[in-house]
Length: 172
Image 1 (cartoon, rainbow, N blue to C red):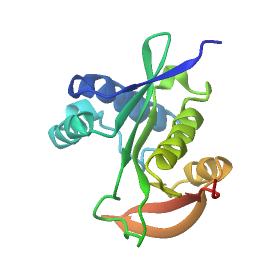
Image 2 (image 1 turned 135 degrees about the horizontal axis):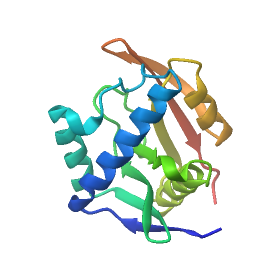
Image 3 (image 1 turned 135 degrees about the vertical axis):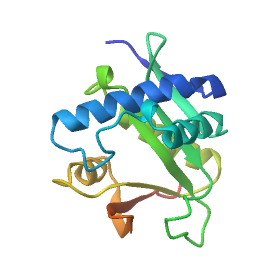
């Protein structure tokens, strides 16, 4: 099995991210989970295309690669998005975590979560937070719990149920 490598993101990664989102939408629809992101590919929705372009330009974007092929992506931000309650301490907020469908089951998500923890350490922080879709059968919340995160607050945006989770890193 090839090792997962990490590189910094670039604005021209927008096409790579759109492909990942389109693949995820198709995968979710096939499994009856269209509630998460709908059934329309991101690349067919101008608002989502603009959002993904902004993600590609984010200075905290990292791309996980396997054999030089983009296998996943994450954004490590200093603050949560506006719809998430802030905390009174510095954190690393995982504002994006996605795996290309052809790399599902290869540990890409776990690798990126480990890198988020390492980034928190590099920034001198002990809190890593992430949010996810809390609908359907709760599989995504269970995934993050299995990766060591603890659910904190729930939220809703236009009928979309979400869960914030955190991982508090032990002191060094």
